[in-house]
Image (cartoon, rainbow, N blue to C red; front, side, top):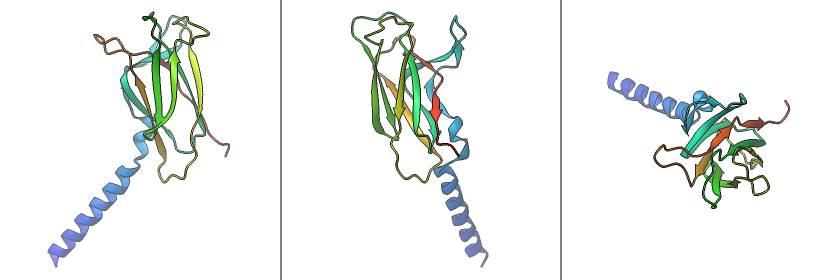
Length: 152
């Protein structure tokens, strides 16, 4: 009888852990592939990307506004930043903006998020920079993300 209770309790604990880890409440604060926050000479917050980075937004978000800048002069080839949500391509952003080729100029991209039924509380946003300074593992500057949500 004790063995059956132990096995049942073990199964219940494993199931509870799997449910909790499927959509943990702390995932909204996680980021990966970015350096620490810094400030530019104008006091604006940014962080350097690496080759790949991820962050999370609430699942009810309707759009996000991303800010990028190359910050340093590069060869004539533009830098591309690929953005995906939940492993699906969302946008490709070119840096610097061809209309404003100054590498210190921020490129803003407001991206509507696809609406789909979700059981999770957060969605993963992935940022991939194809060109970065290899010796330093730095990509481009990414400013603070603005998240649009429906009014409650």
